[in-house]
Length: 469
Image (tube, rainbow, N blue to C red; front, side, top):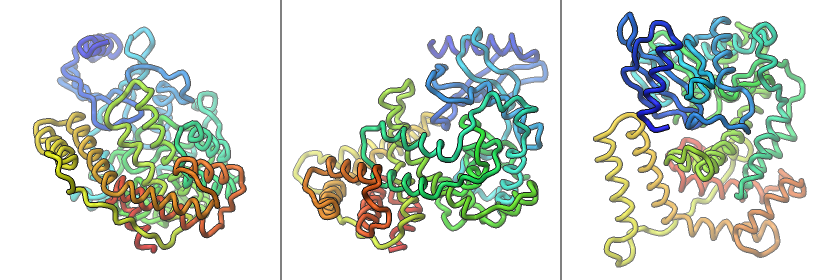
């Protein structure tokens, strides 16, 4: 279905299914939503023009391999959470197969700040920001207290133990044709520190800075329920503390805006349960491991999926951010950074760096100036990807040569870099390589830190790793 046909069909559905809708004025796909599509609609109603939001499966196509919840269940989750006192938009309509728009739902549009970086830094949120960690704790307690049977959610959600959740990510990663030893190291650590004693409840599973909306009074909407399940609720407390979602404020572990004790206090007051910090730390490690695999999945989806935008391979390179966070949590210590080569060499006219820089600057200075919304966002992503290529050219060859030398020494065998990486990965997977091997830890730490120097040297975890040394 083309864009014109999509808009025409959507307009017809709005008129047919929501009583007050008279016509569709406009529809805009928003910049976020790497897993699902999100749209802002402006709808003519009897009360005047009204903004609405639509959440839809990518391309409108339902993935038969995707585990629950469906988008219809997401809508039920939001309705159930709203009834439990969690701030949520009102769901107006859940799309049906006969609507011809795929899987999704239409809901109330709420104004507020949803971008994590803005929540961390926006001056207009200065007064509410110090209270957000406490508020997050209280909201999570309400989510975890939702009655799964009374709402009908128990039969529509998966029940997943921590061990199953870890293996689901680890097994998914093992299908990718890329050896990432730090991911296997983290998986081994998680399997050896697994929590088995927990109070089962509803888990949002993606409650983080960037997945809720904030206004001048606090959090006014919890978003993106697409990976909710029944399991260990402490998963949510660990995820909101994962460094990927602190947006540069690594000194404030809860979302880049608050402290652990405020999060725990809010949760304990609202739930009547005591929080074990070590239990939460397990899930913080898991959060970095899980998103490291998830980022690689985005790159794989670029190769095989219906949404082959420039955003997906760029997210794939963010796996190294999560891996350096695992380094900082599990094996901090000294590292040696590779100096690399200067780019400005050679007599080509133009040089490769000049070609790349010219395209990058065109995207940032011309395309971004002339566009807005998703096109503007993707132009920024494309410019960032070209920066990665420039750093790869400057640092990649030297970093890989040093990694190969370390692997030869660690494993006691020769081979090309890819083969040696696979040998180490298999040794971690079968348990023949001990996690407390100091040479292993030094190798992983150095390899991951030098990779993040290529992928995103401005990431806060990179500075933390270097400072730890």
